[in-house]
Image (cartoon, rainbow, N blue to C red; front, side, top):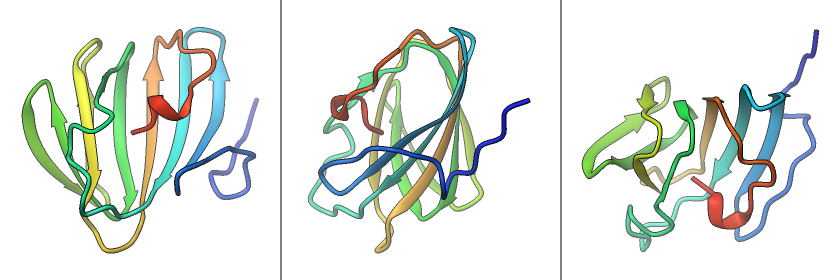
Length: 119
């Protein structure tokens, strides 16, 4: 059994965000943690990309504007959304504080996420 804690896990980050791979089970499941800064100048589609896995996107703290396959939505602390496989996802933090996001993806074949793969 593997246990991880989002606040003490090792991670990386640049450009004001944190990215941590919390749990991984081969190519079947990834649990990812992101802490993203507020950036009112950013467009929701800046850095938009296709998710290569069906994912659950859960907002731990903050408020995020998202675009999933062109459909806009606002997610706040406690909200969760299912992101279908291979759709374009764009995000923008709209709260005045950073947003914390947990993503659980399955199956996931992204082995080395880069800053360009941020959410």
